[in-house]
Image 1 (cartoon, helix red, strand yellow):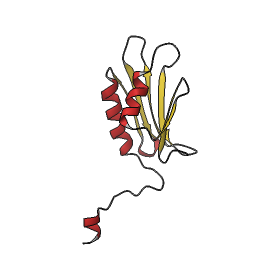
Image 2 (image 1 turned 90 degrees about the vertical axis):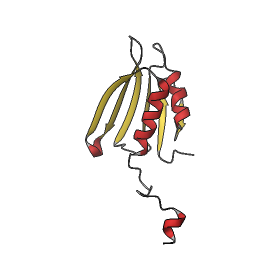
Image 3 (image 1 turned 180 degrees about the horizontal axis):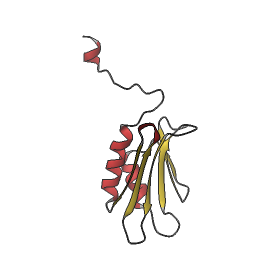
Image 4 (image 1 turned 135 degrees about the horizontal axis):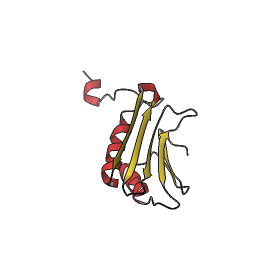
Length: 113
């Protein structure tokens, strides 16, 4: 079954559809400086308008790139904590636009008003 919203791929071939924060943490934690140096997360579209990547740095830590062409966003930062990176990416991805996902969720109580 294909990803509903986005997928994560690492250099060593690991792939996870719609990864949770915990799954992203595990993928980032498993990075190394020899044969698994990066993870890329992007929307599950033919021509994705956004992506995020995490790559190992030779001096330790990680470089995080977030790019969203639809919002003219391009940010490059560094960090050392896989936990913080996974949390921040999860929050960032939640704000992205996904085809077929409504922009606003209506709760049952709002629906009956």
